[in-house]
Amino acid sequence: MSATTGSPVGAERAATTRPQRRRPTGGESSRAEAWRRRAPLMPALLFVIICTQIPFLLTIWYSLRSRNLLRPEGEQFVFLRNYLDIFVDSTFRAAALHSILITLGCVLAALVLGLGLAMLLDREFLGRGVVRTLLITPFLIMPVAGALLWSISMFDPTYGLVNWLIGTVGLDPVDWTSRFPLLSVIIALVWQWTPFMMLLLLAGLQSQGADVLEAAQMDGSTRGQTFLFITLPHLRFYIELSVLLGAIYVVNTFDQIYLMTAGGPGTASANLPFYIYQRAFLGFDIGQSSAMGVVTVIATIVIATFALRLIFTSINSKEQS
Amino acid sequence: MSALAAAPGTAAPGAVTPHRRPRGVVTGHLLSVLAWAAGLLFFAPVAWMVMTSFKQESQAASNPPTFFFTPTLEQYTSIIGSAAAGSYVLNSVLATGISTLLVLALAVPAAYAVSIRPVKRTQDVLFFVISTKMLPVVAVIMPIYVIAGQIRMLDHILTLIVLYTAMNLPIAIWMMRSFFLEVPAEVLEAASIDGASLLRTMRTVLLPMVAPGVAATALICVIFAWNEFFFALNLTAADAATVPIFLLSTMTSEGQFLARLSAASVLASLPVVLAGWIAQKQLVRGLSMGAVK
Image (tube, rainbow over all chains, first blue to last red; front, side, top):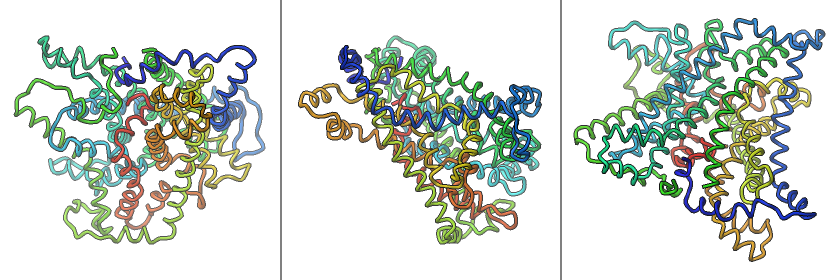
């Protein structure tokens, strides 16, 4: 599958030279050799471990303790009580649900739109480069700027552009971010992430061999058949990759929630990252917010495992081809 | 399968456009129009932001919206002239620039050790490195906040530099690895037969060959560091605040601010937008961590 993306030169090299490079010769020198190989890796590896693993271990530690920065005297070991507390916390469950809704809604909508746009761009027409450039711009706009652009310039109930637009066809103005907070956030996110999906899928479409499409055409298959039986299977890797990578970024969405709805009204649009932030930095409840963080990590690992397996399948087949 | 293989250079737009049977001319035109319409629709909010940035405040927040007006540079001159904006920009430049350099200094040797002369269990190393990128940031913010407070590094630009380095390092290792794997074996063998030392091979043979890869990696790191908001919001205050925080500071509770906010947004987004426009191909590769070329 992924051989389609690798260069022929690289594949050939991998086949002929990788094995001998991989095995250091045995004996005393092999240990020295192993360390020589390891040396360039160590600084980066140590840096990553110090910056990510140590804080995460501390988060687990905090999550087993009761600690509130506003009440410094009450710190003690509480085992799993924080976890029990958050599971009976209906706001936490709602935030988890919102996370799922936002992620699913945004990723699916962006995928469908991105696929459509990629197919529109996978053909010659006047100004194709310009259209592509226009389309990727939402992804390049600073997310904070994009979120404020949507919440104020687009969705403001009195002078927002969206209400003016629906007013021209006779609809009454809507207070978007209050009445449809989740939808508003999802719209802003889809606007930002559709270009991401489109770029990856367009690369997939363009890596399709012209000879295969020609052969299909000569065999008399229709356009629809070619798409269904040749293009879609070829795109599968790109679709999976863009969905999983997109999901990993979108599930962590914070900027748009914080800036567009502040999780509101009430907690109607708080997702997990925002709710944890609220509990940590506005409620100063370190124990519970840490427990929520740990739970979020466990949930993310489920998605991430699929993503990693996919990426690894791709590099493995690439190296063995 | 390798019959389908596309050389890396051929992924450029238009290069491998499949030959298709001619469609009706009308359908073709319709699809082109549709593509243009979609492009303009997605760009419209950005265009509106740019338009708003050239308005007076009273025209920016008007009902109905103001479409025709005499453009003014008032917002831009007042932002560029203000000393406060300068300190935000300086912090962003420092955090982005130094963290990107650090990332490259750490990632290039590391990527070498998982590609050209791979360590044992290379796959495990790669798996571990990328898994850290997938951990939600909210899960580590509390200890980072507490530690930074204890060592008096809250609201210090160094804290952001370290965190942005950690944030981008996994992507950079993966990206640089995919570029190292493309270096033809003959080149490396020739160098080793010449008896060139490791460092010399690296400097004189390898690095020039992967220079485009280094540039692409740097671009991705710059984009993510420049746009980062969560750490900046929680770990900085008056001294180390970066450009995204400046955008928030333009919003005042009394009076109108939309034109000024729009101008600030345009200025804040401009570096990344321009870089991304120029390097569209590298963007794809970086966003997929090297998996899509």
